[in-house]
Image 1 (cartoon, rainbow, N blue to C red):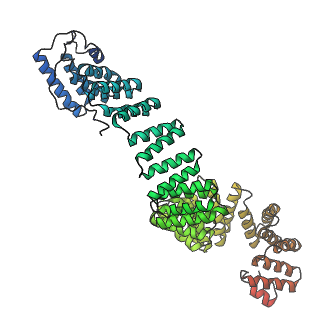
Image 2: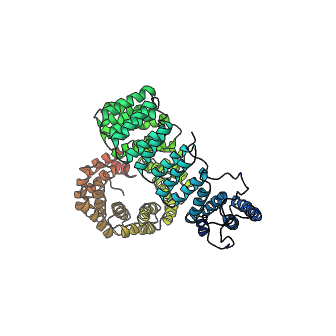
Length: 586
Protein backbone atom coordinates (compact mmCIF):
# COMPACT_ATOMS: atom_id res chain seq x y z
CA UNK A 1 0.00 0.00 0.00
CA UNK A 2 1.45 3.41 -1.03
CA UNK A 3 1.21 5.84 1.80
CA UNK A 4 2.55 9.00 0.19
CA UNK A 5 2.29 10.27 -3.36
CA UNK A 6 4.45 12.75 -5.19
CA UNK A 7 3.22 16.26 -4.59
CA UNK A 8 4.89 17.58 -7.72
CA UNK A 9 2.51 17.61 -10.67
CA UNK A 10 3.84 15.43 -13.45
CA UNK A 11 4.72 17.69 -16.31
CA UNK A 12 3.22 15.42 -18.87
CA UNK A 13 0.61 17.73 -20.32
CA UNK A 14 2.26 20.89 -21.57
CA UNK A 15 -0.77 22.09 -23.53
CA UNK A 16 -2.92 24.50 -21.60
CA UNK A 17 -6.61 23.75 -21.37
CA UNK A 18 -8.48 27.00 -21.35
CA UNK A 19 -11.60 26.82 -19.19
CA UNK A 20 -14.04 29.42 -17.89
CA UNK A 21 -14.12 33.05 -18.94
CA UNK A 22 -11.23 35.56 -19.07
CA UNK A 23 -11.06 38.45 -16.65
CA UNK A 24 -12.39 41.86 -17.52
CA UNK A 25 -9.07 43.21 -16.33
CA UNK A 26 -6.87 40.71 -18.18
CA UNK A 27 -4.76 43.44 -19.81
CA UNK A 28 -3.58 44.80 -16.48
CA UNK A 29 -0.30 42.90 -16.36
CA UNK A 30 1.03 44.56 -13.22
CA UNK A 31 -1.97 43.60 -11.02
CA UNK A 32 -1.17 41.52 -7.93
CA UNK A 33 -1.40 37.75 -8.30
CA UNK A 34 -3.69 37.32 -5.32
CA UNK A 35 -6.25 39.74 -6.79
CA UNK A 36 -6.08 37.89 -10.09
CA UNK A 37 -6.85 34.57 -8.43
CA UNK A 38 -9.71 36.03 -6.40
CA UNK A 39 -11.36 37.30 -9.56
CA UNK A 40 -11.57 33.86 -11.23
CA UNK A 41 -15.30 33.60 -10.75
CA UNK A 42 -16.05 36.92 -12.44
CA UNK A 43 -17.87 36.57 -15.79
CA UNK A 44 -15.37 37.33 -18.61
CA UNK A 45 -15.18 36.52 -22.28
CA UNK A 46 -13.40 33.35 -23.37
CA UNK A 47 -9.77 33.92 -24.50
CA UNK A 48 -9.11 33.91 -28.21
CA UNK A 49 -7.19 31.19 -29.97
CA UNK A 50 -4.24 33.54 -30.31
CA UNK A 51 -4.30 34.39 -26.58
CA UNK A 52 -4.40 30.71 -25.73
CA UNK A 53 -1.38 30.02 -27.94
CA UNK A 54 0.59 32.91 -26.45
CA UNK A 55 -0.35 31.76 -22.96
CA UNK A 56 0.79 28.23 -23.74
CA UNK A 57 4.14 29.49 -25.02
CA UNK A 58 4.64 31.61 -21.92
CA UNK A 59 3.71 28.65 -19.74
CA UNK A 60 6.22 26.37 -21.47
CA UNK A 61 8.95 28.98 -21.15
CA UNK A 62 8.08 29.38 -17.48
CA UNK A 63 8.39 25.63 -16.98
CA UNK A 64 11.89 25.70 -18.42
CA UNK A 65 12.98 28.36 -15.94
CA UNK A 66 11.22 26.51 -13.15
CA UNK A 67 13.16 23.35 -13.92
CA UNK A 68 16.36 25.44 -13.92
CA UNK A 69 15.33 26.70 -10.45
CA UNK A 70 15.16 30.30 -11.65
CA UNK A 71 11.87 30.80 -9.85
CA UNK A 72 11.74 34.60 -10.18
CA UNK A 73 11.87 34.42 -13.98
CA UNK A 74 9.45 31.49 -14.01
CA UNK A 75 6.98 33.51 -11.93
CA UNK A 76 7.11 36.45 -14.34
CA UNK A 77 6.30 34.19 -17.29
CA UNK A 78 3.51 32.36 -15.44
CA UNK A 79 2.00 35.70 -14.43
CA UNK A 80 2.01 36.86 -18.06
CA UNK A 81 0.32 33.62 -19.09
CA UNK A 82 -2.17 34.05 -16.27
CA UNK A 83 -3.25 37.44 -17.63
CA UNK A 84 -4.37 35.67 -20.81
CA UNK A 85 -5.81 32.43 -19.34
CA UNK A 86 -6.50 32.93 -15.62
CA UNK A 87 -8.87 29.98 -15.35
CA UNK A 88 -6.37 27.34 -16.38
CA UNK A 89 -6.02 24.85 -13.50
CA UNK A 90 -2.49 23.74 -14.37
CA UNK A 91 -1.29 27.33 -14.62
CA UNK A 92 -2.82 28.23 -11.23
CA UNK A 93 -1.17 25.16 -9.72
CA UNK A 94 2.20 26.11 -11.14
CA UNK A 95 1.86 29.68 -9.90
CA UNK A 96 1.11 28.37 -6.41
CA UNK A 97 4.04 25.99 -6.58
CA UNK A 98 6.39 28.77 -7.71
CA UNK A 99 5.33 31.03 -4.85
CA UNK A 100 6.03 28.10 -2.53
CA UNK A 101 9.55 27.76 -3.92
CA UNK A 102 10.02 31.49 -3.34
CA UNK A 103 9.04 30.95 0.31
CA UNK A 104 5.81 32.86 -0.03
CA UNK A 105 3.12 30.34 0.89
CA UNK A 106 0.59 33.04 1.77
CA UNK A 107 0.42 34.38 -1.81
CA UNK A 108 0.42 30.84 -3.15
CA UNK A 109 -2.80 29.81 -1.37
CA UNK A 110 -5.32 31.64 -3.65
CA UNK A 111 -3.80 30.04 -6.74
CA UNK A 112 -3.90 26.56 -5.21
CA UNK A 113 -7.55 27.17 -4.29
CA UNK A 114 -8.27 28.35 -7.82
CA UNK A 115 -6.65 25.21 -9.27
CA UNK A 116 -8.93 23.03 -7.12
CA UNK A 117 -11.99 25.11 -8.10
CA UNK A 118 -11.16 24.51 -11.76
CA UNK A 119 -10.29 20.79 -11.38
CA UNK A 120 -11.63 19.22 -8.20
CA UNK A 121 -10.46 15.71 -9.11
CA UNK A 122 -6.69 16.35 -9.18
CA UNK A 123 -5.15 15.06 -5.98
CA UNK A 124 -1.93 17.06 -6.40
CA UNK A 125 -3.79 20.35 -6.11
CA UNK A 126 -5.17 19.38 -2.70
CA UNK A 127 -1.78 18.15 -1.54
CA UNK A 128 -0.15 21.43 -2.48
CA UNK A 129 -2.84 23.40 -0.70
CA UNK A 130 -2.39 21.23 2.42
CA UNK A 131 1.36 21.80 2.28
CA UNK A 132 0.91 25.55 2.01
CA UNK A 133 -1.38 25.63 5.04
CA UNK A 134 0.96 23.39 7.02
CA UNK A 135 3.91 25.69 6.38
CA UNK A 136 1.86 28.54 7.80
CA UNK A 137 0.87 26.39 10.80
CA UNK A 138 -2.77 26.52 9.76
CA UNK A 139 -3.42 22.94 10.78
CA UNK A 140 -7.20 23.09 10.65
CA UNK A 141 -7.12 24.39 7.08
CA UNK A 142 -4.53 21.78 6.07
CA UNK A 143 -6.70 19.04 7.54
CA UNK A 144 -9.69 20.47 5.68
CA UNK A 145 -7.69 20.24 2.43
CA UNK A 146 -6.94 16.57 3.07
CA UNK A 147 -10.57 15.85 3.92
CA UNK A 148 -11.68 17.58 0.71
CA UNK A 149 -9.20 15.43 -1.19
CA UNK A 150 -10.54 12.26 0.40
CA UNK A 151 -14.11 13.32 -0.40
CA UNK A 152 -13.63 14.49 -4.00
CA UNK A 153 -10.89 12.30 -5.45
CA UNK A 154 -11.70 8.62 -6.04
CA UNK A 155 -9.37 5.97 -4.58
CA UNK A 156 -7.56 8.52 -2.41
CA UNK A 157 -7.87 6.70 0.92
CA UNK A 158 -4.09 6.40 1.12
CA UNK A 159 -4.02 10.05 2.10
CA UNK A 160 -5.64 9.23 5.41
CA UNK A 161 -2.09 8.48 6.51
CA UNK A 162 -1.00 11.97 5.55
CA UNK A 163 -3.89 13.43 7.50
CA UNK A 164 -3.01 11.33 10.55
CA UNK A 165 0.65 12.37 10.33
CA UNK A 166 -0.41 16.02 10.13
CA UNK A 167 -2.42 15.70 13.33
CA UNK A 168 0.38 13.76 14.99
CA UNK A 169 3.02 16.35 14.08
CA UNK A 170 0.83 19.08 15.55
CA UNK A 171 0.16 17.04 18.74
CA UNK A 172 -3.56 16.93 17.96
CA UNK A 173 -3.73 13.44 19.34
CA UNK A 174 -7.49 13.02 19.56
CA UNK A 175 -7.89 13.92 15.87
CA UNK A 176 -5.03 11.57 15.00
CA UNK A 177 -6.72 8.72 16.90
CA UNK A 178 -9.99 9.34 15.05
CA UNK A 179 -8.12 9.26 11.75
CA UNK A 180 -6.50 5.95 12.68
CA UNK A 181 -9.99 4.57 13.27
CA UNK A 182 -10.93 5.63 9.74
CA UNK A 183 -7.78 3.96 8.42
CA UNK A 184 -8.52 0.66 10.13
CA UNK A 185 -12.12 0.69 8.89
CA UNK A 186 -10.77 1.00 5.37
CA UNK A 187 -7.64 -1.16 5.51
CA UNK A 188 -8.09 -3.38 8.55
CA UNK A 189 -5.54 -3.76 11.42
CA UNK A 190 -2.15 -2.32 10.51
CA UNK A 191 1.08 -2.69 12.44
CA UNK A 192 2.28 0.90 12.04
CA UNK A 193 -1.11 2.27 13.03
CA UNK A 194 -0.98 0.29 16.26
CA UNK A 195 2.54 1.52 16.96
CA UNK A 196 1.57 5.15 16.35
CA UNK A 197 -1.54 4.83 18.43
CA UNK A 198 0.46 3.30 21.27
CA UNK A 199 2.92 6.19 21.11
CA UNK A 200 0.03 8.63 21.39
CA UNK A 201 -1.28 6.86 24.47
CA UNK A 202 2.18 7.02 26.03
CA UNK A 203 2.42 10.75 25.34
CA UNK A 204 -0.98 11.12 26.96
CA UNK A 205 0.37 9.10 29.92
CA UNK A 206 -2.39 6.56 29.40
CA UNK A 207 -0.36 3.45 30.20
CA UNK A 208 -3.42 1.22 30.39
CA UNK A 209 -4.46 1.91 26.80
CA UNK A 210 -0.83 1.70 25.66
CA UNK A 211 -0.62 -1.78 27.17
CA UNK A 212 -3.90 -2.77 25.48
CA UNK A 213 -2.53 -1.59 22.15
CA UNK A 214 0.66 -3.54 22.85
CA UNK A 215 -1.33 -6.71 23.41
CA UNK A 216 -2.99 -6.18 20.02
CA UNK A 217 0.45 -5.86 18.46
CA UNK A 218 1.55 -9.11 20.07
CA UNK A 219 -1.61 -10.88 18.96
CA UNK A 220 -1.12 -9.77 15.35
CA UNK A 221 2.67 -10.19 15.37
CA UNK A 222 3.39 -13.18 17.65
CA UNK A 223 6.98 -13.62 16.40
CA UNK A 224 8.18 -10.01 16.73
CA UNK A 225 10.48 -10.02 19.74
CA UNK A 226 10.76 -6.21 19.76
CA UNK A 227 7.08 -5.94 20.64
CA UNK A 228 7.55 -8.28 23.58
CA UNK A 229 10.41 -6.11 24.83
CA UNK A 230 8.36 -2.94 24.46
CA UNK A 231 5.42 -4.55 26.22
CA UNK A 232 7.66 -5.68 29.08
CA UNK A 233 8.82 -2.10 29.53
CA UNK A 234 5.22 -0.93 29.72
CA UNK A 235 4.35 -3.54 32.32
CA UNK A 236 7.37 -2.49 34.34
CA UNK A 237 6.34 1.16 34.06
CA UNK A 238 2.89 0.24 35.36
CA UNK A 239 4.39 -1.46 38.42
CA UNK A 240 3.79 -4.99 37.16
CA UNK A 241 7.29 -6.50 37.24
CA UNK A 242 6.09 -10.12 37.39
CA UNK A 243 4.07 -9.75 34.17
CA UNK A 244 7.04 -7.95 32.64
CA UNK A 245 9.31 -10.88 33.51
CA UNK A 246 6.80 -13.35 32.07
CA UNK A 247 6.62 -11.30 28.86
CA UNK A 248 10.41 -11.33 28.56
CA UNK A 249 10.51 -15.05 29.07
CA UNK A 250 8.09 -15.39 26.15
CA UNK A 251 10.50 -13.30 24.09
CA UNK A 252 13.42 -15.52 25.04
CA UNK A 253 11.53 -18.58 23.90
CA UNK A 254 11.61 -16.98 20.45
CA UNK A 255 15.18 -15.65 20.71
CA UNK A 256 17.04 -17.31 23.60
CA UNK A 257 20.15 -15.15 23.15
CA UNK A 258 18.47 -11.79 22.77
CA UNK A 259 20.75 -9.54 24.88
CA UNK A 260 18.17 -6.81 25.40
CA UNK A 261 15.74 -9.27 26.95
CA UNK A 262 18.48 -10.46 29.30
CA UNK A 263 19.33 -6.86 30.20
CA UNK A 264 15.74 -6.10 31.08
CA UNK A 265 15.49 -9.30 33.10
CA UNK A 266 18.62 -8.23 34.98
CA UNK A 267 17.09 -4.87 35.81
CA UNK A 268 13.77 -6.36 36.87
CA UNK A 269 15.43 -8.94 39.12
CA UNK A 270 17.57 -6.24 40.67
CA UNK A 271 14.41 -4.25 41.44
CA UNK A 272 12.93 -7.33 43.10
CA UNK A 273 16.08 -7.89 45.15
CA UNK A 274 17.15 -11.02 43.26
CA UNK A 275 20.75 -9.85 42.92
CA UNK A 276 22.22 -13.24 41.98
CA UNK A 277 19.78 -13.66 39.10
CA UNK A 278 20.30 -10.03 38.11
CA UNK A 279 24.06 -10.55 37.79
CA UNK A 280 23.53 -13.78 35.86
CA UNK A 281 21.30 -12.06 33.31
CA UNK A 282 23.54 -9.02 32.82
CA UNK A 283 26.56 -11.27 32.22
CA UNK A 284 24.64 -13.20 29.55
CA UNK A 285 23.82 -9.90 27.87
CA UNK A 286 27.39 -8.62 28.00
CA UNK A 287 28.77 -11.84 26.57
CA UNK A 288 26.75 -11.25 23.42
CA UNK A 289 28.38 -9.36 20.52
CA UNK A 290 24.83 -8.45 19.46
CA UNK A 291 24.61 -6.03 22.37
CA UNK A 292 26.32 -3.00 20.88
CA UNK A 293 29.41 -1.52 22.45
CA UNK A 294 27.75 1.85 23.12
CA UNK A 295 25.01 0.24 25.20
CA UNK A 296 27.59 -1.70 27.18
CA UNK A 297 29.65 1.44 27.76
CA UNK A 298 26.58 3.32 29.02
CA UNK A 299 25.85 0.55 31.51
CA UNK A 300 29.46 0.39 32.65
CA UNK A 301 29.52 4.15 33.14
CA UNK A 302 26.57 3.70 35.51
CA UNK A 303 28.64 1.16 37.44
CA UNK A 304 31.60 3.55 37.50
CA UNK A 305 29.44 6.29 39.01
CA UNK A 306 28.61 3.95 41.90
CA UNK A 307 32.21 2.96 42.60
CA UNK A 308 34.05 2.44 44.85
CA UNK A 309 31.55 -0.07 46.20
CA UNK A 310 32.71 -3.53 47.33
CA UNK A 311 29.35 -5.05 46.40
CA UNK A 312 29.64 -3.88 42.79
CA UNK A 313 33.37 -4.26 42.26
CA UNK A 314 33.33 -7.95 41.35
CA UNK A 315 30.50 -7.84 38.83
CA UNK A 316 31.77 -4.62 37.27
CA UNK A 317 35.22 -6.15 36.66
CA UNK A 318 33.61 -9.23 35.11
CA UNK A 319 31.52 -7.05 32.82
CA UNK A 320 34.51 -5.11 31.48
CA UNK A 321 36.28 -8.39 30.76
CA UNK A 322 33.21 -9.66 28.91
CA UNK A 323 33.03 -6.41 26.97
CA UNK A 324 36.61 -6.80 25.80
CA UNK A 325 36.03 -10.45 24.90
CA UNK A 326 32.97 -9.66 22.78
CA UNK A 327 34.45 -6.49 21.21
CA UNK A 328 38.20 -7.10 20.93
CA UNK A 329 38.65 -4.50 18.18
CA UNK A 330 36.76 -1.69 19.90
CA UNK A 331 38.90 0.99 21.54
CA UNK A 332 35.92 1.94 23.69
CA UNK A 333 35.93 -1.49 25.33
CA UNK A 334 39.50 -1.09 26.58
CA UNK A 335 39.01 2.56 27.52
CA UNK A 336 36.00 1.93 29.73
CA UNK A 337 37.78 -1.06 31.25
CA UNK A 338 40.69 1.23 32.11
CA UNK A 339 38.36 3.78 33.68
CA UNK A 340 36.72 1.21 35.90
CA UNK A 341 39.92 -0.61 36.84
CA UNK A 342 41.58 2.68 37.79
CA UNK A 343 38.83 3.43 40.29
CA UNK A 344 39.04 0.01 41.95
CA UNK A 345 42.83 0.26 42.26
CA UNK A 346 43.95 -2.09 39.49
CA UNK A 347 46.22 0.58 38.08
CA UNK A 348 48.65 -1.51 36.05
CA UNK A 349 45.85 -3.48 34.39
CA UNK A 350 44.05 -0.22 33.72
CA UNK A 351 47.16 1.35 32.18
CA UNK A 352 47.65 -1.66 29.92
CA UNK A 353 44.04 -1.51 28.74
CA UNK A 354 44.42 2.18 27.97
CA UNK A 355 47.47 1.29 25.89
CA UNK A 356 45.39 -1.24 23.93
CA UNK A 357 42.76 1.44 23.43
CA UNK A 358 45.26 3.85 21.84
CA UNK A 359 46.62 1.05 19.66
CA UNK A 360 43.16 0.89 18.10
CA UNK A 361 42.42 4.61 18.19
CA UNK A 362 45.15 7.03 19.24
CA UNK A 363 43.11 10.20 18.82
CA UNK A 364 41.79 10.56 22.37
CA UNK A 365 43.72 13.06 24.48
CA UNK A 366 42.10 11.98 27.76
CA UNK A 367 43.17 8.36 27.35
CA UNK A 368 46.79 9.40 26.77
CA UNK A 369 46.52 11.60 29.84
CA UNK A 370 45.36 8.63 31.90
CA UNK A 371 48.25 6.54 30.60
CA UNK A 372 50.97 8.96 31.69
CA UNK A 373 49.21 9.65 34.98
CA UNK A 374 49.18 5.93 35.78
CA UNK A 375 52.81 5.60 34.68
CA UNK A 376 53.63 8.25 37.26
CA UNK A 377 51.50 6.65 39.98
CA UNK A 378 53.12 3.29 39.26
CA UNK A 379 56.56 4.93 39.54
CA UNK A 380 57.48 3.59 36.10
CA UNK A 381 59.59 6.51 34.93
CA UNK A 382 60.91 4.82 31.77
CA UNK A 383 57.35 4.07 30.67
CA UNK A 384 56.39 7.64 31.58
CA UNK A 385 59.04 9.03 29.25
CA UNK A 386 58.13 6.65 26.43
CA UNK A 387 54.38 7.21 26.59
CA UNK A 388 54.62 10.98 27.05
CA UNK A 389 56.84 11.16 23.97
CA UNK A 390 54.28 9.15 21.99
CA UNK A 391 51.54 11.47 23.21
CA UNK A 392 53.57 14.53 22.24
CA UNK A 393 53.82 13.29 18.67
CA UNK A 394 50.01 13.53 18.54
CA UNK A 395 49.46 16.50 20.87
CA UNK A 396 52.63 18.66 20.73
CA UNK A 397 50.88 21.71 22.15
CA UNK A 398 49.46 20.00 25.23
CA UNK A 399 51.52 21.22 28.17
CA UNK A 400 50.53 18.33 30.40
CA UNK A 401 52.52 15.86 28.30
CA UNK A 402 55.60 18.09 28.47
CA UNK A 403 55.14 18.11 32.25
CA UNK A 404 55.05 14.33 32.50
CA UNK A 405 57.92 13.97 30.04
CA UNK A 406 60.02 16.38 32.10
CA UNK A 407 59.05 14.61 35.31
CA UNK A 408 60.06 11.24 33.86
CA UNK A 409 63.46 12.58 32.86
CA UNK A 410 63.84 14.17 36.30
CA UNK A 411 63.21 10.83 37.99
CA UNK A 412 65.65 9.16 35.61
CA UNK A 413 68.19 11.90 36.47
CA UNK A 414 68.27 13.16 32.88
CA UNK A 415 68.25 16.67 34.29
CA UNK A 416 69.06 18.60 31.14
CA UNK A 417 66.30 16.82 29.18
CA UNK A 418 63.96 17.37 32.10
CA UNK A 419 64.63 21.11 32.10
CA UNK A 420 64.18 21.34 28.32
CA UNK A 421 60.75 19.70 28.46
CA UNK A 422 59.65 21.53 31.58
CA UNK A 423 60.65 24.96 30.31
CA UNK A 424 58.87 24.36 27.00
CA UNK A 425 55.71 23.15 28.72
CA UNK A 426 55.85 26.09 31.09
CA UNK A 427 55.80 28.50 28.14
CA UNK A 428 52.75 26.71 26.74
CA UNK A 429 51.03 27.12 30.13
CA UNK A 430 51.47 30.86 30.42
CA UNK A 431 47.74 31.43 30.86
CA UNK A 432 47.30 28.66 33.45
CA UNK A 433 48.92 29.79 36.73
CA UNK A 434 48.28 26.53 38.56
CA UNK A 435 49.99 24.51 35.85
CA UNK A 436 52.87 27.00 35.71
CA UNK A 437 53.35 26.40 39.44
CA UNK A 438 53.57 22.65 38.83
CA UNK A 439 56.26 23.20 36.22
CA UNK A 440 58.20 25.49 38.57
CA UNK A 441 58.12 22.86 41.31
CA UNK A 442 59.85 20.35 39.05
CA UNK A 443 62.19 22.98 37.63
CA UNK A 444 63.28 23.87 41.17
CA UNK A 445 64.33 20.25 41.73
CA UNK A 446 65.93 19.93 38.29
CA UNK A 447 68.03 23.08 38.51
CA UNK A 448 69.13 22.13 42.03
CA UNK A 449 70.33 18.78 40.72
CA UNK A 450 72.43 20.59 38.09
CA UNK A 451 73.75 22.93 40.81
CA UNK A 452 72.13 25.89 39.09
CA UNK A 453 71.02 27.14 42.48
CA UNK A 454 69.97 30.61 41.46
CA UNK A 455 67.50 29.25 38.91
CA UNK A 456 66.35 26.64 41.41
CA UNK A 457 65.62 29.31 44.01
CA UNK A 458 63.80 31.45 41.46
CA UNK A 459 61.57 28.54 40.46
CA UNK A 460 60.73 27.73 44.09
CA UNK A 461 60.10 31.38 44.93
CA UNK A 462 57.72 31.64 41.96
CA UNK A 463 55.70 28.74 43.33
CA UNK A 464 55.51 30.25 46.81
CA UNK A 465 54.47 33.60 45.35
CA UNK A 466 51.50 31.79 43.84
CA UNK A 467 50.89 29.33 46.70
CA UNK A 468 52.61 30.36 49.93
CA UNK A 469 51.73 27.10 51.70
CA UNK A 470 52.83 24.69 49.00
CA UNK A 471 54.03 21.73 51.06
CA UNK A 472 56.24 20.20 48.40
CA UNK A 473 58.22 23.40 47.84
CA UNK A 474 58.41 24.36 51.51
CA UNK A 475 59.94 20.96 52.23
CA UNK A 476 62.33 20.64 49.29
CA UNK A 477 63.37 24.27 49.20
CA UNK A 478 64.22 24.39 52.91
CA UNK A 479 66.00 21.02 52.76
CA UNK A 480 68.12 21.95 49.76
CA UNK A 481 69.06 25.26 51.36
CA UNK A 482 70.18 23.36 54.44
CA UNK A 483 72.27 20.98 52.37
CA UNK A 484 73.98 23.97 50.78
CA UNK A 485 74.33 25.85 54.12
CA UNK A 486 72.61 28.71 52.35
CA UNK A 487 70.07 31.15 53.78
CA UNK A 488 69.44 28.90 56.76
CA UNK A 489 67.12 31.35 58.50
CA UNK A 490 64.80 31.30 55.50
CA UNK A 491 65.05 27.52 55.48
CA UNK A 492 64.18 27.42 59.18
CA UNK A 493 61.16 29.70 58.68
CA UNK A 494 59.82 27.54 55.82
CA UNK A 495 60.43 24.21 57.53
CA UNK A 496 59.02 25.49 60.81
CA UNK A 497 55.87 26.71 59.10
CA UNK A 498 55.45 23.31 57.48
CA UNK A 499 55.86 21.39 60.75
CA UNK A 500 53.47 23.75 62.52
CA UNK A 501 50.75 22.57 60.12
CA UNK A 502 51.85 18.93 59.91
CA UNK A 503 53.32 18.13 63.29
CA UNK A 504 53.37 14.34 62.80
CA UNK A 505 54.75 14.09 59.27
CA UNK A 506 58.13 12.31 59.61
CA UNK A 507 59.53 13.72 56.34
CA UNK A 508 58.75 17.30 57.34
CA UNK A 509 60.10 16.68 60.84
CA UNK A 510 63.34 15.38 59.34
CA UNK A 511 63.68 18.41 57.07
CA UNK A 512 63.18 20.83 59.97
CA UNK A 513 65.59 18.79 62.09
CA UNK A 514 68.26 18.96 59.43
CA UNK A 515 67.90 22.74 59.15
CA UNK A 516 68.37 22.96 62.95
CA UNK A 517 71.33 20.59 62.65
CA UNK A 518 72.96 22.94 60.17
CA UNK A 519 72.26 25.81 62.61
CA UNK A 520 74.00 23.67 65.29
CA UNK A 521 70.80 23.39 67.33
CA UNK A 522 71.43 19.68 67.98
CA UNK A 523 69.06 19.38 70.93
CA UNK A 524 66.22 20.83 68.89
CA UNK A 525 67.08 18.55 65.97
CA UNK A 526 67.19 15.50 68.28
CA UNK A 527 63.66 16.11 69.58
CA UNK A 528 62.28 16.36 66.07
CA UNK A 529 64.10 13.24 64.85
CA UNK A 530 63.01 11.20 67.88
CA UNK A 531 59.45 12.07 66.96
CA UNK A 532 60.08 11.22 63.30
CA UNK A 533 61.60 7.78 63.87
CA UNK A 534 58.72 6.88 66.15
CA UNK A 535 56.55 6.60 63.02
CA UNK A 536 59.10 6.04 60.23
CA UNK A 537 62.15 3.87 59.59
CA UNK A 538 63.18 5.76 56.45
CA UNK A 539 66.95 5.32 55.91
CA UNK A 540 67.67 9.04 55.55
CA UNK A 541 65.80 9.90 58.75
CA UNK A 542 67.59 7.14 60.69
CA UNK A 543 70.98 8.24 59.37
CA UNK A 544 70.24 11.84 60.31
CA UNK A 545 69.28 10.66 63.77
CA UNK A 546 72.65 8.99 64.04
CA UNK A 547 74.43 12.14 62.90
CA UNK A 548 72.70 14.23 65.57
CA UNK A 549 73.56 11.65 68.25
CA UNK A 550 77.18 11.82 67.16
CA UNK A 551 77.18 15.59 67.53
CA UNK A 552 75.79 15.10 71.03
CA UNK A 553 78.72 12.81 71.87
CA UNK A 554 76.66 9.60 71.78
CA UNK A 555 79.07 7.81 69.44
CA UNK A 556 78.04 4.21 70.07
CA UNK A 557 74.36 4.94 69.68
CA UNK A 558 75.11 6.94 66.52
CA UNK A 559 76.90 3.96 64.96
CA UNK A 560 73.91 1.73 65.75
CA UNK A 561 71.62 4.13 63.91
CA UNK A 562 73.98 4.27 60.94
CA UNK A 563 73.98 0.49 60.79
CA UNK A 564 70.17 0.49 60.78
CA UNK A 565 70.17 3.02 57.95
CA UNK A 566 72.57 0.91 55.89
CA UNK A 567 70.26 -2.11 56.19
CA UNK A 568 67.57 -0.05 54.48
CA UNK A 569 69.83 0.36 51.47
CA UNK A 570 68.98 4.02 50.89
CA UNK A 571 71.50 5.79 53.09
CA UNK A 572 74.10 8.34 51.98
CA UNK A 573 77.33 7.55 50.13
CA UNK A 574 79.26 8.07 53.38
CA UNK A 575 77.41 5.44 55.39
CA UNK A 576 80.02 2.71 55.13
CA UNK A 577 82.83 5.09 56.00
CA UNK A 578 80.89 6.39 59.01
CA UNK A 579 80.32 2.91 60.35
CA UNK A 580 83.83 1.69 59.70
CA UNK A 581 85.67 4.69 61.13
CA UNK A 582 83.00 5.65 63.66
CA UNK A 583 83.28 9.21 62.51
CA UNK A 584 80.90 11.73 61.04
CA UNK A 585 81.26 12.53 57.36
CA UNK A 586 79.02 14.90 55.44
